[in-house]
Length: 536
Image (cartoon, rainbow, N blue to C red; front, side, top):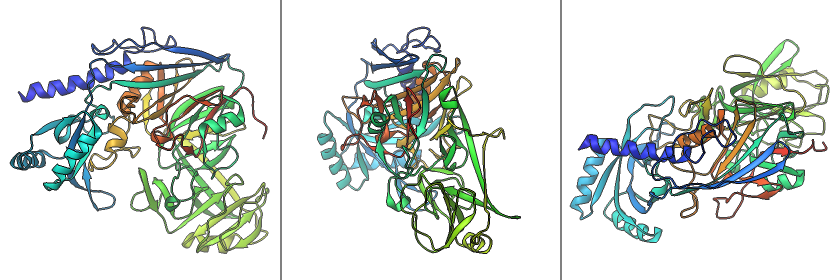
């Protein structure tokens, strides 16, 4: 019986993935896909096609599954301890002993629980097989009914959540609204650019930037700071570059989309960054560009605590670092203890003193805190020439040289590598096999997603799926996102920022359905497909 249940659960996962893959007809949407046969529950999908410019095509569809019957339910959550924080928290799944004991307590309280195995997705760097067990009570037609039931279970001494089963990876989604844009560099005469629209610290909606720049397609780009407690809002938490200038540093070795020569070439690679500030023979590494010293969003920098490796949506801290600011920072410079120097266009120190003020045009600012501030005071005196060396490398150690028209946008994780699904979820800090409270909903449940990839012909693929929309669109898991990108012909692909940030604009008009109740989210950076290079 246990074997039958395990096989049934795995079959549901396979059918869900097959439904995503099977929406593409044989030969792929653009003639390069590695298509799979549709699952038996998948419905036929009709794509609408628009050519928005020579070499740029946009297709949209609603993927439907007739066999899906999502409902509301009550999930009893398992007690857990956050591995980074050490604090008590809750996880959607737990160990066998917890599940059995919890089910017994529920039955004793007059409830009818069900215990379900949850399997690890096909990540490249996590365990395989059973992740844990979840305990649930009842099925309900409405969220209100599920919440009333959850209150009763909570009153009996359990920690609960009202959940929509359409977000579960082991259940097929009933519908997923997708938009896909493909840019053929052999035919498209315009440019593709990652952009902060001239102000790294300003948040703006994807569609407003698209309309301002006159782009034919725009999507949201990388992760960014959304709260003042985590730094300066709008600044990127991973590597980014606009028109050849590095505007933020990598959070460890994470996936990035490198766009060269204004979009003539694009590739996906895991990138790291090193920035060295030198005064004569004395050098000191900087650990940030355009961010608040001491606050390291998504972690991933040497010296950061509690971790030097990437952790999604976690803010690490540092008490000893240099941070560089470009003249596109846009906001008032961070204040507080430490030191600051202003460099002119030739790299000479024109002023030194307390932190604060703004970055002058055609200048740069270096701030230091802790011992790094002492180094700055000792070696960066007025009139001294300061050299700043930036080094971007991929995991093979190859240097990535940035020139005019080059952009980098970064998020996480890698989805497809060399034509194969390769989701390095643990290495890029979006899940933790030793802490099931971390990243479960972010990675393993369906969410709105924005994805980017490159096919075998060098064409850039930009894709979105709406999510968190009961009876509207439920989104993708990371595994479904990887399967979808492969079905479109991507040989390399990554996830960009998703959730409420997911947006695609076509001819300046939003075509996606944002998940935030307030509408389209203002984001920290976008990727725009432009008919011509915008004026500087």
